Length: 493
Ligand code: TRP
Image 1: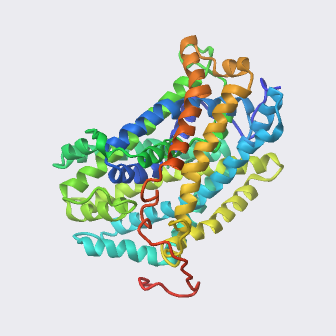
Image 2: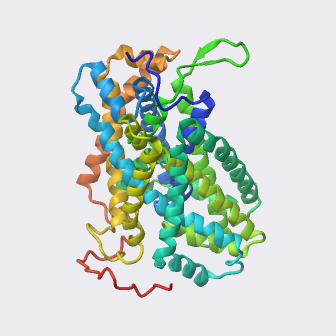
Image 3: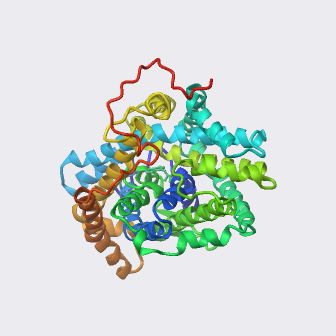
C-alpha cells in the first residue's frame, strides 16, 4: 500500500524545490532573531559549539527520520503516523506523535506570527527614515511604544497571519512552492549583501572572536538545554512540519542530463538543508554582531538585540536606514516561509478529513490568531502576570521549544529506529553507502534518544539559576491580578 500512495496535496516539482521549502521552513526567526541573542546571552562560542554538535548528531539523523517517515506515509503527520503504525503492526496510538506535533505547531504558529509582525513594523520604521540619527532612548522608546500599542501589534500580527494563511490556502504547488521559489533566492541575496557590508566593518573581527573563540567556563547546563531545544527549533524538527513536507517529496525524478529516472536521496538532501540552515544562522551572527560591536553596544540584550540594539546601530551608520530596511525585509521573508510550514501540517490534516483547503486555512489561521492575542498581551497588559516566573508567551515558548519539540523528536527517532520494520526504513532511505546507513541507524536508535533523555534529566536535576525566559526572567513571581481594562503606564496610544 505504501509504495504507490500519491499524496493528495501535491508533489514538489523537483528535489530542489523540496530543499527550498524545507530550508525555508528551517531558516526563520530562529536563525536571525533567536540564535544571535541566545548566543549573545549564553557566552557566545560555548553556546555555538553545543548547538553545532546538537545539529550534527541529533538534528540531522532525526531530520532524516522525519523526511523518511513523511515520504513513506504520504499524508499529514497524524495520518502518516497512523499508516506507518498499521504498516509496522503496532497500535494506532502512535498517531499521538502526530497529534503532539499538531498541538505544538499550533502553539508555535500563534506566537511566531506575533514576533514576525514586529519585523513588519520595523520595515516601516526603517523605510520611513523615522529612526535616522536616533539615540538609545529614542530607539528604546520606539520598541516600548510598539509593545505598549496593543492595537498596532495586533494589526501586524493579523497581517502576518493573513500572509501565512494566504499561501497555505493556495496549496502545495500554487502556494508553498511559488512562495519559496521567490522568497528563498531573495533571502540569500539580501543576506549576502549585508554580509558584504559587515566585512568592511571594524566590528567584524570582534564578532568572529565572540562567536567562535570557545571558552569552556562559559558553558552551563542551561545553555545545553537551550542549545538542544534550539537545534530542534531551527531545523523545524519534532512537530511534523518536515514530515509533512517530506510527504510531498518525490521518490524519483528525471535527470536533466541523461533523461533517466533517478532516486531522490533523503540523506544528501537533509545534509544540504541542515548545512544551509546552520550557515544562515552563523552569517546572521556575522551580520548582526559587527554592527553591535562597532557601536560599542551590548551583545547580551536578549530578544531586544534585533529590535533595539540593531536599529540603534543602523540609526548612526551611513545608509543605515536602507540597510535596516533590507534587513527587516529579509527577516520577514525568512519568517514567512517558516510560518507557512507551521500551518501546513494541520491544514493538510483537515483537508484529509474532507475539508476544503481554504476553509481549513481560515479556521486554523483564525484560531491561532486568537491564541496569539495571549502573546501580544504578554508584552504589555499581562507582562506582570507570570506563572513559574514566565509570562504567557514565555511559558508557551518554553513548553513548545524546550519540551514538546525534543519529546516529539525523541518519539520520532524511536519509531524510525525501533518500531518500524528495518527493511522499510532502509528501502525508503535508499542510501548508497551501507556504512553511512548503519551510522544513521545507530544515531536514531541509540545516540539521539539518549542525548535527548540525558539533557532532560540533567535539567530536571540541576536547577540552573534563571529560567529560559529572558525578557521577564527578572520579574518576581507574584500573583499579580491585572485588571483587563487597566492601561499599563507605558501605553502611548
Ligand atoms: N525553524 C523555524 C525558525 O528557525 C521555525 C519553525 C518553522 C519550526 N516550522 C517549524 C520549528 C516546525 C519547529 C517545527 O524560525
